[in-house]
Structure formats: structure tokens, C-alpha cells
Length: 210
Length: 83
Image (cartoon, rainbow over the protein chains, first blue to last red):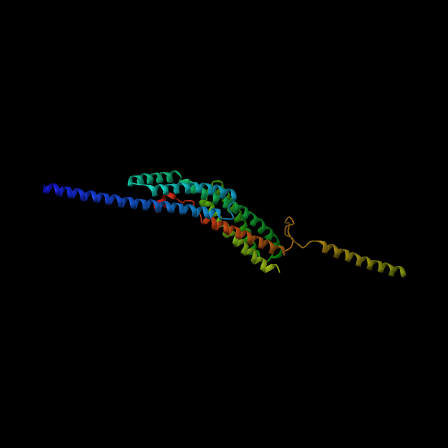
């Protein structure tokens, strides 16, 4: 009789412990999934905001990116609702697996949206850089006549314009292959070079044009 | 004698007239500038062109900053796992 009582007590305590443990796991998993989904939604919104609020991105790209990212966000919000209404630990584990699979399947959506926006910006950068090169050549042609003594600066500018053309061609190649990393790299080089061209032109202008 | 004076006067008048037309024709020649499709003809236009270049540089700067702020390797799976 005594032994039966002891065994029953042990089993009861074990049962309570297991139930408590399951409750802790349920709460912890629910919290983890919710935090993860919030992080994803926040990231999607941040990317969308950067693209949609950028005046340099075309309307067509904005609409396309917005549509893709909103679909992604909508799906994740739906999973969030499912997590909130999940009754058991098993339900949560099943939803968690669905989310992991969904994110794996749709991993390219956000990357492609970002790439589309970067390509769009790169194309605009080519137009701007070509316009700048043309204007710089016009100014340099006049300054060559007005400032024949400034041979060093004129030579530097000529070399910079040759280099600018080369960088524009590299940017065009990167745009053809949609290589986002190289597009950004070339845009940075072109921006730096264009600023330097402007500085040198201003220097010539200050010396020779009154 | 009168004929000699007349010839001298005619020569002087002719020289003055030739000088006048030569000066006039030199003034009508544009300032020495290179061939540039007529887009910039005077050094003074350089300031306007440099102003336009500054404006294009601002556009390039904005485009570059915007592109740099986007990470093409953004991974939602990692964000979900808290990485």
C-alpha cells in the first residue's frame, strides 16, 4: 500500500513536470517564431521603403517591387496569425516548419527586388555619367584654348575622361549581367571620378576664365 | 602736279577704306574656339556647363548612396532565425 502511494506520487510529479515543461516550450517557441516573423516583416518594409521612396527609381520598378514584397509580407502576416491561434506545441512546430519552407522557396523574391532596383539605379547612373562626360568634354575643349599654359591639369582631365568612359562601359557590362555587386562598385567609382573631373574643371576655370 | 595730288589722295582714301573693311572683317570672325558643335562658343559658357556638371554629380551621388544602402544578399531565412 505504501509502495503504491509512493509510486503514484512520483508519477503525478513527473506528469506535472512534463506538462509544465511542454507549456514552457510552447510559450518559448511561440515567442521565437513571432520575433522571427516580425524581423522578416520589418526587413521587407525597410527594403520596400528604400526603393519606393527613392525619386531616382522608375515607377515601373517601384510597382513591380512593391507588388512582390507586399505578397511576401502578406504571407508572413498570415503565418503570424496562425502562430497566435495555434493551440498546441505540435501545431506551433508544424507552422514553424511551414515558415522555414516558405522562406526557402521564396528566398529569391527579396533579392530579386533589390537587384531590380539596383539595376534601375545603375541604368540612370549610365545616363548621368554619359551626360556629364559630354559636358566635361565641351568645357575642356574651350578651356584648352583659354588655358594653354595649364598643360598638367588639362592632361589629367583628358585621362580622367578616358577612364570615365572605361568605367561607364564596365557599368554597362555589369548591367547586362545584372551583377548587383559590380554595379554598385562601378557606380561608386564613377561618382568619385566625376567629382574629381568637376574639381579639375573648376580649377582651370578659376585660373583662365575671368 | 594736280594729277599727282589727286592720285595720292585717291591712294590714301583707298588705304583707309581697305583698312576699315579689313578691321570690320576681323571683328566678325568668332573668338578663337575649337569645333564643338556650337554648344559652347565662349569661355564664359564654361561656368554654366560646370554648373550643369555639379547638378549631374548630385544625381550620381544620390543614386550611389541609394544603391549602396541596398544589400543584394538580404536573406529572410537568416532574419527569421535572428541572425
